[in-house]
Amino acid sequence: MKKIGILGDIGSGKTFVAKKFDCPVFVADDEVSKIYSKNKFFFNKLKKKLPKYIKSFPIKKKEIISAILENKNNLKKITNIIHPIVRKEMSKFLIKNKKKKIVVLDIPLLLENKLHDKKFILIYIDANKKNIMKRLHKRKNFDLKIFKSFKKLQLPIKIKKKKANYIIKNNFKNNFVLKRVNTIKKDLLK
Image 1 (spheres, one colour):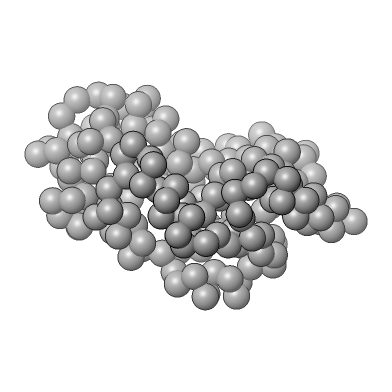
Image 2: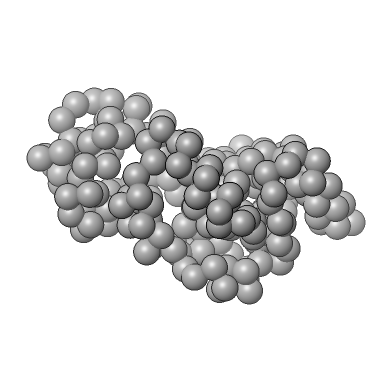
């Protein structure tokens, strides 16, 4: 099985591109949403660490956002609790799909949290900053302070690009991205 790790800036279209590979895709952001809404264990641990913010189950994104905005150290507390759960879900995904030729892992802090190994094929999604900001401002929960907090956790773009085996320019046009994805896929399946 070839594991593709998708890298890129926040809002660069990592999930959009990942899904174009037409293979099993692990989307960490979707897992986090499931954890917020269905995982009582996570809720109880988080409520103990952040009782001032986490009030009821399922966890509301507003509560997480206000905890992070009030104190940037709260982000670290949240990630320390949620990352082991996401890792476990990723392991289950890999076991379930072990017979597949290719799987795609869309994990925002893949390199930063050392969730990859030397066998990973890393693909950097390169998008224009103006397009990214336009897209982010359209998101209903977009908050510039949260964006900046998450940005600080990321490795510089130069490093991510250097580590990437492939770069896909994302102009947010379906056919353009699909052509590049198909070229990479063919190359990987040789």
